[in-house]
Image (tube, rainbow, N blue to C red; front, top):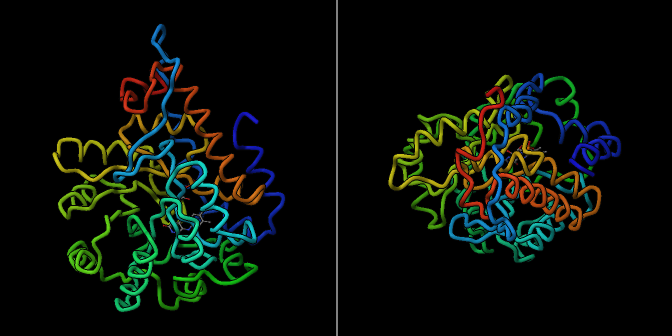
Amino acid sequence: MTDLGPLSEWAEKTWSEPVRTMIQDGAGTNATVVRNQSAWLNWVLRTRVLVDVSNIDTAVSVLGRTLSAPVLVAPSGLHTLAHPRGEVATAEGAASFGTTMVLSSGTGTPMEDVFAVGGPTWFQFYWRRDRGALREILARAAEHGAEALCLTADLPVRPLLGERMRHAVGNLPGGPPLYVLDRSAHVTGGEWDHDARVTWKDLDWLRDVTELPLVIKGITTAEDAIKAADCGVDAVIVSNHGGRAVDHGRPTAACLTEVVNALNTRSHAPEILVDGGIRHGRDVLIALALGARAVLVGRPILWGLAANGAEGVRDVLDFLRRQLESCMGMTGCSSVQEINRTTITEAQQ
Ligand SMILES: Cc1cc2nc3c(=O)[nH]c(=O)nc-3n(C[C@H](O)[C@H](O)[C@H](O)COP(=O)(O)O)c2cc1C
């Protein structure tokens, strides 16, 4: 296998129509999903020669934790759709690879079982209206060992879903996601996971209820990156929810440059992570060259999980790392810290 395409195709053939649509598709026409992936190809690698690349080290530190490679597991709901052991198997795969898993509040497996695996884990959440319930869930995640809390902010309102996705939401096999509101809200208009009244000012409340590092996922603009920095957020994830929130959105590769430019003059800036359409170690290298500290991958983890449980997850991560190592060697980088803006150039140049 030279890329993850065959694994994706295998998963698409294996899954039932609702599961395939739920995992692979995005909001509306899927335009954002498609753009996310192709945007990384707007950049090409500047190769270097006669540099000592006999030892290539992909280790990186994210929020003070050293990871074996700059690739984290993105939060995604219901891993039980892909494998009966669900998020527990994903956590085992991520831990054996040596990276952080961001556990979704839409997990199909109880958080206690996932934290019990013992790998580095962040807990992702939406800001629901019931603050008592929110406080309880966050306290529970902290008690079981969450190393950070990740607020997903990019779904202030319901996404506009196409017919196929609406049908998929209502016809998924298995149990419901555990710490989010009923999925039917996606289609019927019941209470939504995110309290649309919440603003930056409300982060003070979060700071009062937790001492854990705070990550905001779903930042795509300079304006919001600056607000996050002003609020003392520990990390931002440049993300459009894998194209599942806004249709016809900007690809995250483009957003990343804007966010990096907005934050690079600040002495105390949040760490910058990015996700969306990363399918190759080359994309990881490009993201780092554009200024991200690390990336997250969503769908490829679910393909690996479906194919071979924990081992499949580790294999996908290993695959991306080996490709990254090759790209680093070709561009004269023996450590990820050496990757910078001169490592790549725009494709048309
Ligand atoms: C099936 C699925 C479920 C997802 N569920 C969540 C979620 O519960 N919370 C969240 O913050 N992001 C969720 N995401 C978005 C991912 O965290 C991530 O932003 C996205 O998948 C990255 O794009 P990629 O799949 O192209 O790698 C989900 C993505 C997928 C594909």
